[in-house]
Length: 120
Image (cartoon, helix red, strand yellow):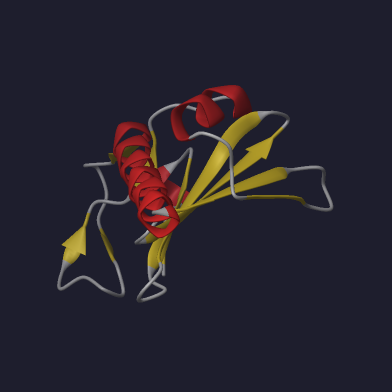
């Protein structure tokens, strides 16, 4: 029974990650880039808005991990069944989302500007 409950929680976490990512990331139609895992060029991504830590936690729930960098930035991590999402904050405002596929290790770093979009 505990395994089923834990699996349901991970699945719900995955759904929250996907929903949040789709709601906050938008394509920039003015530019094109080629991702390592794509067959052709596509539009780079950027953040639609810079949310606060509280707004992101309200959408995703409590993070699975938290760390701070040397400059005082906060990095919160949520892990679902298929993806890991890391939200990076500077002075309490979201500046970067990193979505990583747990199976392939491929993903993308999405910033406020599509200029800094980094697929990997």
